[in-house]
Image 1: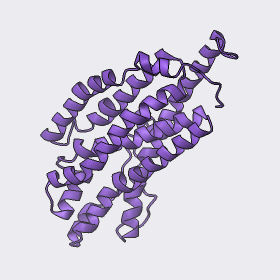
Image 2 (image 1 turned 90 degrees about the vertical axis):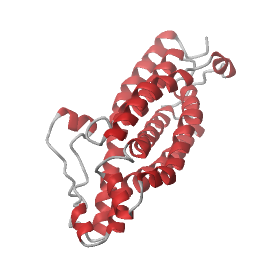
Image 3 (image 1 turned 30 degrees about the horizontal axis):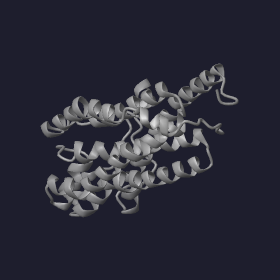
Image 4 (image 1 turned 45 degrees about the vertical axis):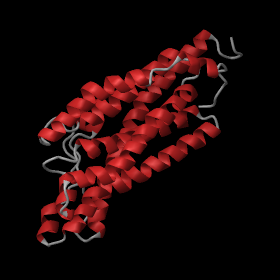
Length: 267
């Protein structure tokens, strides 16, 4: 047994990490969601189509709204922008959330994770990992899940640019696919051993939760109210991609042997 890693201490550290995980999941989801909505709002304000960039529609006080910000939206009146004949500006406002907010935050979160790992800061690494997940999840949520939607951001983008959803799926789909692939092929395997060293059960749970959040939670965004194509894309994401990716990302025994030491880390 490694010095300082008694079974009791390992259990306490694991319990504290999963408690922290719940709090950090909520925090990173809220940050990703709110910054996404504010990106729409501030872009509309900068273009002269909104008086107060902080005036989102915050919804009612409820558990779901507090937990996952279910009722909050950008509160931008796209019809007035289209009525002014500025469809290209409406498209810019519509794409600001996923492209500018989540796109930039994705890059920031990857850099923050590298910083945390270099300094052996597991708690900061967990925050950065979750924050990256929330931003990559938004990529999937919009491209391709809601690219073919009948309304909302992607529909406004396509209407404003007068392009086919297939054009948007092709142009934005490539970088989104690269980001999702990098997350599961590079970042997730690395985070398993860094955040939960020598803890196989916790690593499996991490993979399960990550796969569900990506393909079950964000991937299910098109199930209701976004049209038939978005609905079936969400079905495939939730029922096919979620279990397949979970199995493919299962911690392998050879990975455990490749990293036998479990060094002390600072939280």
